[in-house]
Length: 79
Image 1 (cartoon, rainbow, N blue to C red):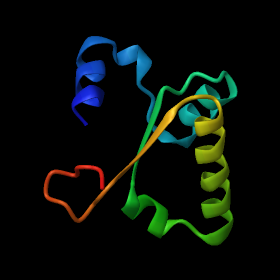
Image 2 (cartoon, rainbow, N blue to C red):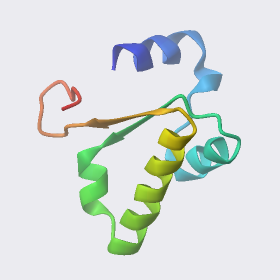
Image 3 (cartoon, rainbow, N blue to C red):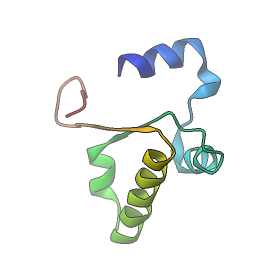
């Protein structure tokens, strides 16, 4: 989370939000870190969950890091 906040403060153009932006960055192999909430996954239907799982695999196979944040932890720290 610290690295995300640092990047957000220094280079906002290197941060994307929402699936459209994330998929565009993935297609360009431009994701250094994918940060998502476990709560987001729980709310997806089965088809979208499979698509998100593919996204995670794509990011990891391109050398990116995937971080799942806990929505139950007060600070949202990864678990």
